[in-house]
Amino acid sequence: MNAGKLMALLLAHHLRVFTTGDVMMLTHLRKDAASHSLRRLEIQGVIQKIKRGVWISKLVQDLSPSEVLIHLTAPWPSYVSLESALAQWGIISQIPSVIYGVTAGKPMKCNTPLGVFHIRHINRRLFGNYIFQGSSAARYPIATPEKALLDTLYFRYRLGGKPNFKEWNWRKLDRKKLKQLARNFPLSIQQNIPRP
Image 1 (cartoon, rainbow, N blue to C red):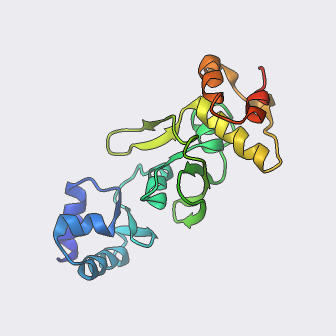
Image 2 (cartoon, helix red, strand yellow):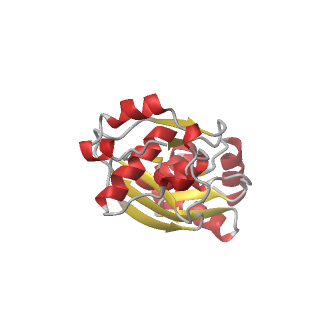
Image 3 (tube, rainbow, N blue to C red):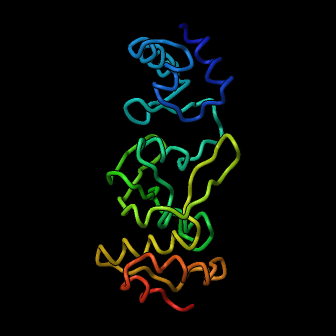
């Protein structure tokens, strides 16, 4: 398949972040042929490799790094959390220099053209309580504000640190929901939820 046809196909299917496997399914090409076609588009500056087998379209103007997270951890599920989610919800004002997420799979650190990702492993029992944020084409999973706070406490205390709560916007948190979710976490986390 020539580069022009493949580019038209990517645009027609609104592919923002996609895999070599996605292209194989759309084009019915074998893996080597699909990879070759994708490399040609990369040379032309139309797409960019994020990691082996994962690509982003450079034709998309509003691509958020958060959209990439689930593709980095696949086939394991993941969602944006910790300070990244707290910043997106307006609970903290400082935007972290890396994108934080949690996964039920292996932890990882990935340097990508869209940014640096720190993805922490969380026990399956604690994985969850996230929603999908963004428009239909640009949706990504993100922890609810309360879950992002609990995930942050969980990992900070495990690493021997403690968040600075002084500048947090507590009005954006549902205290009842926070207390209910906290029951799933260790008692040490429950006891360290500050009172605003």
